Length: 396
Image 1 (cartoon, rainbow, N blue to C red):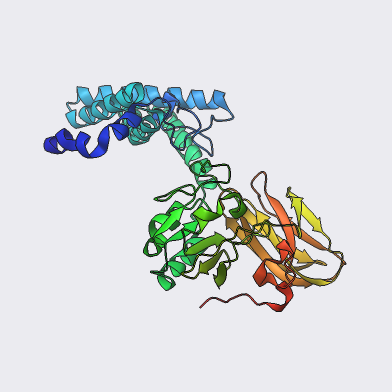
Image 2 (cartoon, helix red, strand yellow):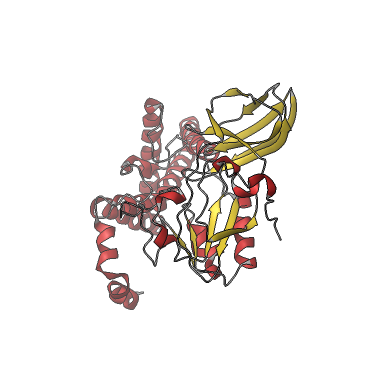
């Protein structure tokens, strides 16, 4: 262990070590976490936010901390040095990281150290019961259990599951099209570029880059951000033989040198030949109608009969149903998408009588869009005149 620590600075580098001490290094945090979270009770769905009921939270925290102190004192009085050593080493390290480390590193330390407080509190409650104060000990134990279970239930309710269907589609693309890179993803999808598409020599416009992928103004995307294909410099796009793009009703078509060779529910794969042609992405010229999503039904009406597709922009956890004249024709639940991405709900032929889409728990800021599907292969929402005579490539 000691030899590893002595040489760590050589392979970590000063830049990495500096980020561990940088007070502005938040990682995926919104702000530095509260030291009170060390107690393991923080009843909120997102640990980065403060609980809504602070009064009850503070009462539970006081009970947990007092019970933990009693537990540590009781353990030391009984010469249970293991408990004292465990609590001291973990808490001293957490406090040191909180004082001298970055907020992101301190948050990791708090998460590792919080079980020792809860464990010591349980020991303290048990000690009170063993000393004959049965009622007081059981009430304190119930308060500790309530705080922990309440916090966990809220966290579990708000958790975002990994988008398995999307990742499985990326895995299939990576296996079937291996060796056809280099490939580019404009969506922020670190698991895609770093793992599932690794055999395509994949890069992300805002994640993993070995080449410059500049916007038209010369700047580059910040980590985690998204931009439409037409926002990038054509010369930088042509460095990539393959484009793996999220399907969307409002996206631009890739430059003319690229041809659609693979299509799934979530992703399209565009490839160009060895000859690099001059051309730019064709901006979307409309064709999709966007409507704000709210709780409850959202009415969508069409002007003329035809094939349409319903999309939802953003993420949602509850079930979202699409109904035509009261008849359900499609549904989806628990869809997780990054910035600027859409998920297709259903394709169907509709008449002007209208449709109604019922939303479960859409994430704030989501939108619904409808798109005419005639000639879907050539991005009909971009109003390409030859779209009606073309067909989309199917999955292999």
